[in-house]
Structures are given as C-alpha cells and as structure tokens.
Length: 215
Image (cartoon, rainbow, N blue to C red; front, side, top):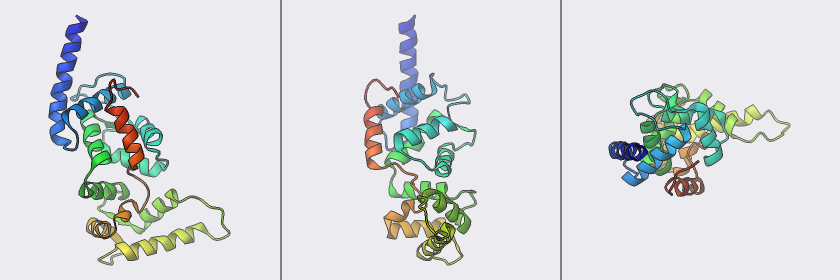
C-alpha cells in the first residue's frame, strides 16, 4: 500500500512540476520538482495546491534571514508580500516557485519590477520621499554621531531624488526607477538589500537541487 501511495505522490509531484515549470521559466522541470519537495519539507507536509495554507510570514522571514542573510524587518516583510501575490498571508507552492524564479534568476526587467514593488511600501505606484526616508533609515547602520542622523538621511533622500527623479515630481514612478537602474545597475537596490547575493544563491541552489531535499 505504501508503495502505491509513494507512486501516486510521485505522479502528483511530476504533474504539479510540469504545470509550474511553464510559469517559472528560469527553472527546469527537475529543479521545480526539487523546489516542491523543499517546500513540502518546510511546510511539514505535502500541500494540495488547491487548498489554503503554505509558508507563513515568520517561516519565510527565517528563510530570508538564515539562508539569504537579510536583516531588515521592513524589507523582509515587503519581500514576503512580493511572493504572496494573493495576499492570503501564506506563500502557496506556485507563489514559492514563481517568486524564487525571479528572486534567484530573474532578468534585469524582472528584478526592476520586483525591487520597485518591494520599495513601494504602500503599493500606490510611487516611491515617496517618506518611503525612501524610512527604508534608508532602516537599512543604514546606526553609527554613533553628534549630528542628527535623520538630517543625514534626509540629505541622502534629496541626493537620490536628484539622481533618479527624472520627471521632477518629488517621487519615483516605476518609469523613473527603471530609467535610473538601466543607466546605473547599482541603483537596483538603492533603498536596501532585497535580492540575494551570488554566494547565498549558490548555497541555496546547491542544497535545494541535491537529493534528497532537506532543510
């Protein structure tokens, strides 16, 4: 009986991987299978893609912190929201695969869209002065100084706006952000690290795509 169940689970896994590999174009079908297995290991059970549930916010934040060395609470929360497309407070298996496709192997176009959505804290289509201030204040190391640190951050916001705000409306639209990043790729993560570095990617992929998958 257990062999039949295992065969059925294997068949279901392959079928799900076949479906998800069509939307996550940066992964092979085999890699998608490995990521589904890892997902099931994280959640603690095989998840039916049609039922509610999955990786919750705290579990995902632990992955971002421990695996991808992210430390900024505000940014980690926004990355979670970037993965959780249907806003149900869980990352489903399809959101996991599609999110990782961009997170680990996204094109510049995909990464520009992803980073902009992370930095647009209230999701209104613009990165405002206030949002820049909050993110820069959060991501910059708090060094003891006699000067008011807020003033230094305000200056940095103004410098950033001068460089990136092409239509001079005192906020960054997606077009402003995209144009600035295409001119200078380093501006992609201007308001805090929200993408993994190459070392973290290699370590994660080495673990995820080896057999068997265990956290």
